[in-house]
Structures are given as C-alpha cells and as structure tokens.
Figure (cartoon, rainbow, N blue to C red):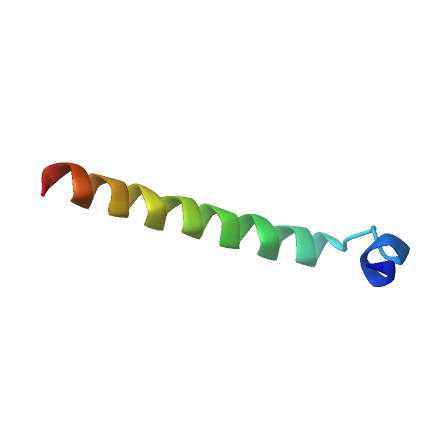
Length: 39
C-alpha cells in the first residue's frame, strides 16, 4: 500500500469525516446488538 504510506497526513476535514463514519458505525452495531439481545 504505497499510497497510504506516502500520504499519512489527513486534513482536518478528512479526520472529521472518518470520525463521523466510525461513530455512525458504532451506533449501528449497538442497535444491532440490542435487537439481538431483545429478540
């Protein structure tokens, strides 16, 4: 993965986008876990 190694610096906007996606993914997985537990 030469591209990722060459470009390790993220812009502020990219960091915010990544953190937002991670937060949404975490919330989704939590809902899925709760649905399985309640089912």
